Image (cartoon, rainbow, N blue to C red):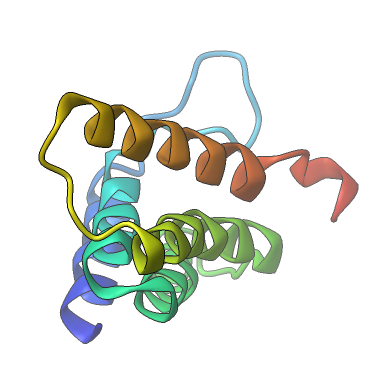
Length: 119
């Protein structure tokens, strides 16, 4: 969990410059794969902690501020695949991979929903 958290925070800090043009508070964060993958492999608690704490540390390193709603959203993005992995542990067929992809997209949509309404 500590390794995943530090990995996510470090990747977030390194890719902080990847802002989308003409948007506020929207970045491309390739590091989000870390809590999602760790959630699939190690379960929902690990995905949640890595997403939440990793995002918090990345924000503190990048902006010297903590945005709890974004940290919670990143934690949820790690939690959802972890919950799915409790019931589906094997990803061998194409259908399994498609199912995992759909769960990942669902986790991202739930985690990143409308951030403006929570501020």
